[in-house]
Length: 248
Image (tube, helix red, strand yellow):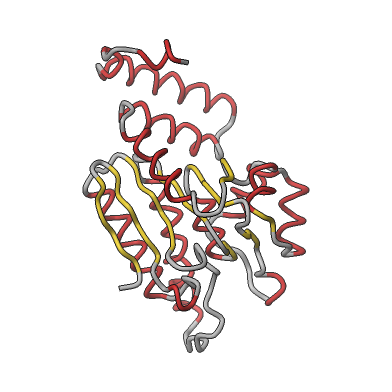
């Protein structure tokens, strides 16, 4: 198995495990990641941490693998299977926290940025080398990246394929936070546990309203916010002690 799934209370941990190839993407790894995310959905976990073993989070497509001999329809199906990772992360009611170290390149960068919160080591390396090797991005990055870093920087990152450190990624808004080397999983797990302790409906709706806002008009965003406010007011979750506001 190249993807491992385990439970830590209300948190699911999904680990990419091809360390000898820097967790590079193969069909087996993609399928395993999809299965793990679907399991997290079925088990109704409250948060997920996605990480990689060895020296990297995920170095992108394994270019040392023999290119598959396939029809155009088979190629489309393979690429859509990779996009299923992004779809499932967005479908999960629970937030997904990526713990990134080493390389997060190509599809690996796409897997990370699809997550709701990204914790990266300061010396991590993010990048999109697809254009330089004659490929194209997938995973919804054409939509997600401009929202994260702005239109001009997104074009620069995709066209030139230059790598960005974890520290720089945090500075430009590509990731949520950068931490010292070796601390990424500890910090990500702490964040996941904190998220798992929060009212689940409110967390899920907060995630949804931001994700769906990517594709919404301002009027649609306002209407969705009212819908979610009504749901949370009726859920009873707000009846619990509101010490968070006091500590605020």
